[in-house]
Amino acid sequence: MASTIRVRATATGDTTEVQALIQHPMDSGFVKDPQGQIIPPHFIQQLTFECNGKAVFVADWGTAVSKDPYVKFSFKGGNKGDDLKISWVDNKGASDTTTAKIS
Amino acid sequence: MKVRSAIPLVSVALALAVLALAAAPPASAADAIDPAADARAFQKFFTTKFPKLKLEDFVNGPYSLNEDMHRQWVEKEEFPPYEFSLDMGKEMFAQPFKNGKSYADCFPNGGIGIRQNYPYFDDKEGKVVTLELALNRCRQANGEAPFSYVKDEMAALTAYMAFTSRGKPFDIKIPNDPRALEAYETGKQYFYTRRGQLNFSCASCHVQNPGERIRAEILAPALGILNAMPIYRSEWGSMGTISRRFTTCNVQTRGVPLDPQSDEYRDLEYYLSYVSNGLPISGPGARP
Picture 1 (cartoon, rainbow over the protein chains, first blue to last red):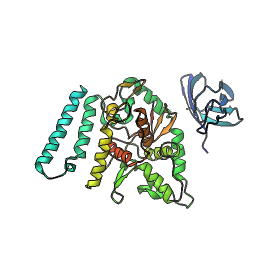
Picture 2: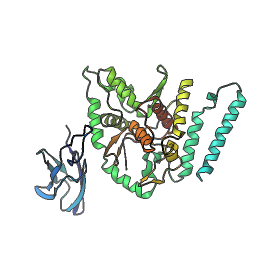
Picture 3: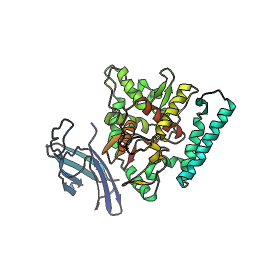
Picture 4: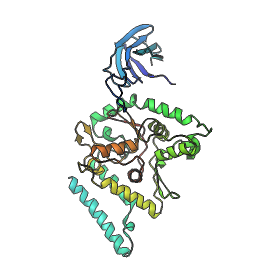
């Protein structure tokens, strides 16, 4: 199975722009399935971006974030070729991590 | 404006009908069907309505219609929301069935770069065969359960097949067979017939009013509308196939949708694809 995280990071001048797309159902716990049963909450609780081991973006998420979330931000520092590590942990304890190079 | 531009079309059609009748009085109405002229008139209508657009711009639907939308599209394409589905489709396509065969065995050229030839008229069956239908038939012929026509796996597979055909112009052929012409004509009828509580035809939105807003959305022109299929619609939050597009359109006009891949929908797809002949495949696409 391919990674659930897609990321693109580009450094221009002294800032790095990061875009990421994460595949996750992000169930809020308020929706019923076609049989009328509640779909239990299942969402990403923490999302972390680390550049060279230093956290540059940490998000504590809840149920209000949409399915397959998309994140875009930029930070100062970060050079071409640096490692950017992205990881998430959800409320069921599942997680995924991927590492991308800043281009 | 809209009425005025419709008049020449009607008069051309009338003139053609009259000509055909004059030339061969006892012949049936089938002789008046001239798909090539229809396609020319159809494309001319849209290029006249949107003089700034090149023909191939129409495949991006509402994203081509104004500057602001175009910027959104450029940004969206940098990081397209259909990526996950596309990867899934690629994986599924390569995965053999239980009997060892694969999708590639069912299609010409191993299924790569052939999206522009679908739908086609199958002279043995006497009906139109769409890509979605062919995929499910391929599965069933190999002892696999068919997929739902509207989303998920079917969307992923068609997304991959469209992706491998990107840039190739639609090349739908109507063989010289009365049944093929009839299928084309039925599709055309379906397209222009009003239905549902709101009394809308497909053409009410996609011929008369493309570029106008319907609530928060901008209506896409009918020309090139199938070139970008399947699409990731932000409104759906997922991918959808041509079948999904047709059924939801019918529901939105408060009509009762037909079954996906019913004869009428197949004919409709045949008609709509044919009049977009020459426009490049751009699927999978993303729409608001």
